[in-house]
Length: 627
Image 1 (cartoon, rainbow, N blue to C red):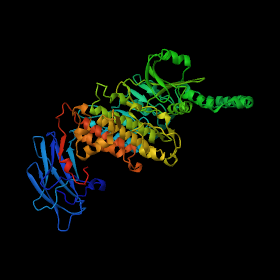
Image 2: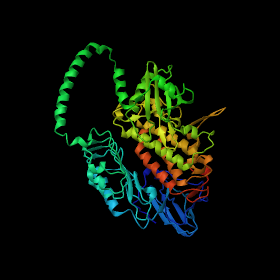
Image 3: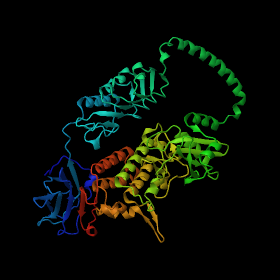
Image 4: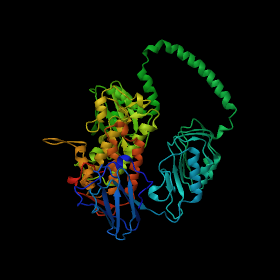
């Protein structure tokens, strides 16, 4: 019992409470749990009604029908009651009643349930822990998951780490690609003696490639692509027979044996080459001045694009698509066709419709963005076609189609609850990169299930973000272009004011998350009326009816705790006031916790542990709104 607990809840949470119609009706909480773990329960109370003079609210709390606590409540003074679950049969009941001398019914503002998970006897190897902590400090890595033991427990393993499954866990792989690492390659990597794979690609690492990496006895894969390394590759690394070494896109790194031998010859050759180049450039500039009027900005742009992505001719596009034989979709550009490259790689070819009003402008926008933006959770651009009036984009093919199709009633292969949480996590990672990972933040403007595609491994990726606009900062985000978006997913504030910013995407993401949870789209049109998901879900949230909220096609196969948390995240994303909506980084963190909860409780039937029932007469709840 902690009447003056220092554990603080938000004032917004404590400003609401559930309350039955009269003092004779109790509030009851029933929880079925895994008896092999210890659990702690916190019940939070705060009197938020100004009772008449000389009236008091006194509650009696019963834990497991054994422990009896009588607690008077004072106006606006929070009280927390706690109990360790002692039941060994996995079934616990909490009951909150009005005391006989109470002048008001019982209330409950909030409750929390914590599970105590002891770590295995053997944590991660101490040398590996010291090494990874030094790497974390050296590069200032601030990933949310990089807390506690790196490998233990397995469901809370640090992001980017792979660990051995033996009793004394060792770090065997480390992926720090796209982690904004700067400086030289730290000696701490050499202390990860069991490391088999190290990926430091697409960072800002400088200096020479260190020879100590060759001393890692088990290293099989070393990816240093896309950095700023200089010098030559150490002989020990070049001669390591079983090492797969990737060092491309390091302009200052010499990959030949003769680099050191010609270190004095190279400057002389370079000087002569520069002189010749200056003469040639002078002649070219003189001739180009006569033809400057025929050069267009468009050709300059497309010249840059050719260096970054593959250009296809129209004849090649015809061959790839077998004369546009198979249609697999459609969008703002026009139809999308299935294609196959020469190496049998399947692609999706999006052909620009000649009737598209803003097609050419959108085409340039999409190609320019996709040519330089790459992320695991964004659909990749394979190439493009720009020949006369023919314009097409060639994307990687996504075998499992789009999320809208997978959530459709016509789809017999229902997405499982953990798969839905994984899709939400993947989409959040892609959106987080667009908002925070790009030099100029990018707003998608049209997030919806049909723009979230899944590959054959059910990895979700965001598509069509090239139709957005990049802007330098939030104050420059008030765009006057034609409003984009799809009804039901468009931010109402954007519709009213035309002001577009990151929080507009957050609203759209919240509606997608709500659709993942419930199986219902934001707007459903029937033969006689139109129904809105928010009108349907709000009363169920107030009544604590999570079974009624979650998609019935899941047949109860979901974790109640993770489901409630997902609902809370979705409702926070669609708050009417944009400034109150969370940033995508916070949304991603919360969804990662949801997924961790679910993966920690594998489910085989609808009566598994971690089920919670909250009972109260919903029709008789007072004007106080339930959490």
